[in-house]
Length: 541
Image (cartoon, rainbow, N blue to C red; front, side, top):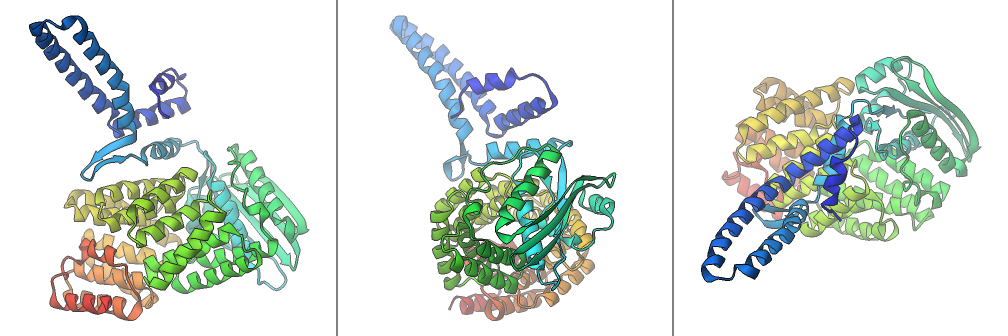
């Protein structure tokens, strides 16, 4: 619980660089939560009340007891008002709990510290004789990446960027420069049956010096011990704090089930509809071996939720997501992804209050989890609360500074709120991030697709059309890519082309969530066209 004494503690801290950041973060929170505003208004109103009261009480002759009583009530009410202003905010929808502020301040404090160590975990190289263990190499590296991402004082390059350098290990200096990290963790895996050999090294990208290295020759059942030793050694070498609750559930898993789980992760990270299906099959194989594997259940729920939200919004996907999610929450209630999956399911069921509670739980478990902030923002778009969605997307973009999706979605929302200047400002930042992604991976469809919108808003129509055409050609059965094509040509004023894309998306490719469609301002140029109404009618049948 927050107490006024907290203010005194912050103000009495010694003035060191870290404490300056903490005081700054706390001061920003006081302003952001309007605590200072409430305090000022309260003092002014209290003064008026006491002055007026003194005159009134003197006139009726009751000043002996009434004025001290009023002063006491006002004095007692002051800390209560401050506490309420810290935890709640007044919105157009009424009084609501301010859930994101304190966590947000922690993240901002971290991002302001330029001395924070940084690392990229590259996918480990497959050194097996058959050359068929790439999935294990990628999955094992991703598990290490996720564990390191939990540490308070460590910047970890996201999977999507780091894994572009799979097999490109010769120039760590170049990798460090392109990924903007100080260190790189790389390794080799030779897995044959139950035998596991792993070589791993941590390299300083500036000097090219090996900071730490190790070789492991163990059995598959020792994979968790190897994982823990790598994580512990890296954290110790970089001087960061270990999060003690990461491994609680994972240690109870059958190694064979874990092998299938890693196989699923390698597919899931590719973000295509077919790979999403393959990943789910692997997660289900893990569950067959280990029926109480909470992470696998959570991943099944997540895959159904992602398919519903991005690719195919069917009742089957929604029902399966809900069923798997219930099991995940039962088996792994402290797992961030369990609550993210539940939040997505609640959003799709239009239970927005419960969805908000689930995303808040996910953020409390891991405030550095980008997906929690991002899908919380998307949920608020579905709900129609665009102002709150903006704040959540802003936080998502801070948690993952290279992410373009959360930034470009802000541009769309600012446009919907008729804030054109702000929309252009975030669009410029978004296209900068998109180009950085395409520099590493020119074929990134999501970057091409969303980047096309940014270019269009910035007046670069020809390049925008090339990017959009390339993304749609590369993913003809990806419903979200095709849907975005309809939005793009709607904004470009090509009404018939936009309607063709929408018809192809909704009727031939897959279903888009109806709530998102209704609140999407990109469709405003075609929304009142008779053909649009026919498409929506067919889609709804």
